[in-house]
Length: 229
Image (cartoon, rainbow, N blue to C red; front, side, top):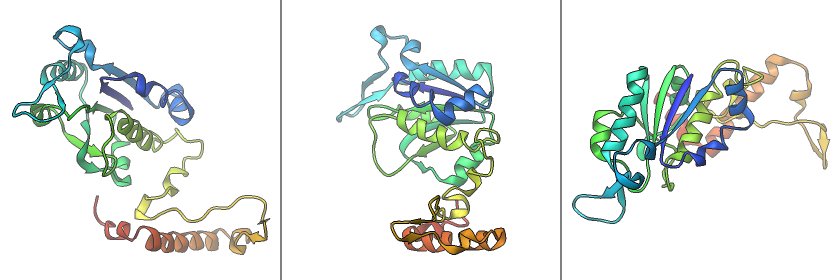
C-alpha cells in the first residue's frame, strides 16, 4: 500500500511512523509512506498556505491554490483509490471502514488545519471525509496517524500473527473479551478455568460469550450498528 499525506507540519508525523509496527510495515515492503509539506507547493511568498475567511469570523482557512497544486501533481503520477480529508465533521472512523481501506493500493490523506480547508477543495477532489472522534484537534496530523495505524496493521503480513487483527475490539461490532497471562493465580485472583482447559472449542465459545457480555455492558451502541458502517 502507498499512502501520501499532505500536511503543513510533516515533522509531527515523522516519529509515529518510525517505530514499532509502522516501521516494520515499511521495512517489509507492505507500506510505502510519503509526507508532503504543503508549504513546498504554495505559489505565494513566505510559504503562505492560509488566508482570512470570506464573511469574517475568527480563524484562518487553508487556501485552495496550494492544495490543488500538490493534489493534481500527485494524481498525475498515479490513481488514488481514495482522497481522504481528516476533519471533525467527517464520518466517524469505524473498524469496518478501516477494513475496507486496508484493501486499497493507493490513498491520499489531507490534514486540515486552522478552521479547515476551502470548501471548493472538498467539492472538487475529496472522495472520503473521516473523523476520529467528536472532538477537535489542532490539526489533522494526529488523526492521519491514527487512520494509518488502524489501516496498515490490517494488511496481511504486517503483524507477526496475522490472526491478531481479526480478533481485535470492534471486529464484528464486538469488544474484545478479557485476556489473561501467567501466573494462573495472582493476588488470590485466578484465571477462569475454561482458559486452562485446553479445549479450543469451549475456549472460543467462552470468549465469544464474554465479548458479547462486555459489549452489552460497555458499548451497547455497537450492537445497534451491527448492520451499519
